[in-house]
Length: 280
Ligand SMILES: C[S@@+](CC[C@H](N)C(=O)[O-])C[C@H]1O[C@@H](n2cnc3c(N)ncnc32)[C@H](O)[C@@H]1O
Image (cartoon, rainbow, N blue to C red; front, side, top):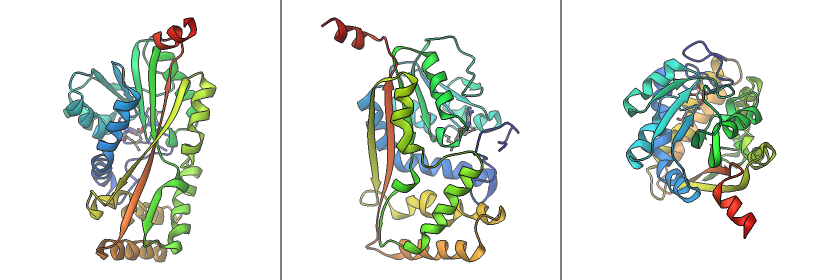
């Protein structure tokens, strides 16, 4: 699928990801980052982010801007295959690099951390991206992957079993476009097979106990499903059903939602921690 620059960004096309075209998607990426960044940052601090950080598939910079504000001393470079989308990250005031994640214009071993947030679910060959990340990481450097698994998206109460097929259709459409919304369950194995050490899984949860229910709209609202009607993957009555259940959910003062995200981190072999351990 082609992004705003006409380049292939795998199953991701910002013009058709949500209702409202590109501007709708820019708003969705921003709202999505706003919703869970605090939890993600807590996990990032926990697993460690050695400098410099390469944010690969940074998109419009929704996370870049927040990382820059939260970790002002950390040098960051933002990269993406879609240079038109990446141009929206200019106000993050970090160097921007237009490139394909499988062919980075960087020498071996020059990066401290590679961050891949919601990128691997869109690429045809996630293992190739992870291998390229390992190539540019210095020994002891960290790869941090933030992803979802569509069968582990979270919990809602009340739940609407009648929507299961609708969400399955979204995963199916992404699969047809070459992506994989079941990537979450594969990540630790992909990183280990690539040669990463100390591979850990750190799930994080975001709930409407401490966020307004409305803030979950990027994940639960019907906007994300609207383009599927245009592509024929979803019927209009199914979209109307999803919109009605979201309206009911938002109007219910007792409704509860927990969104689950997955962070998988691994360490590039040969770093100081590893050699210290092997000599002790
Ligand atoms: C869902 S967006 C996520 C953007 C950003 N990481 C965030 O969390 O807001 C996926 C991003 O991955 C980028 N992408 C997809 N395939 C890529 C590739 N082969 N090389 C570099 N970037 C890629 C897309 O252009 C898009 O910006």
